[in-house]
Length: 79
Image 1 (tube, rainbow, N blue to C red):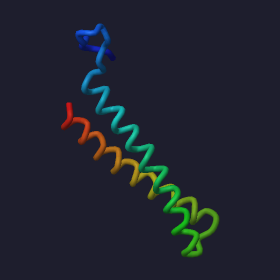
Image 2 (cartoon, one colour; image 1 turned 30 degrees about the vertical axis):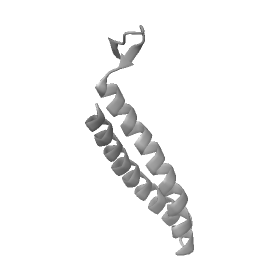
Image 3 (tube, rainbow, N blue to C red; image 1 turned 60 degrees about the vertical axis):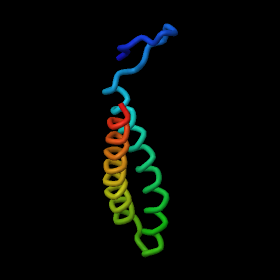
Image 4 (cartoon, rainbow, N blue to C red; image 1 turned 120 degrees about the vertical axis):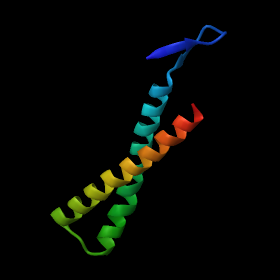
């Protein structure tokens, strides 16, 4: 959703759109980082199969949500 127009004729995204995109980008970065580090740590503990996938999946969602929330707050402060 485009709202304000700058003096140069280009539209600026709304604050809500920026916060939403900050949350989405934070989720993506947090989930991928946890996938890499979580997989290696679970493999080093000897997990296999369903136990490995369940553990990595759960921590991946938690980390993605947390990092996404912090990114959304950061963008909201900046608006």
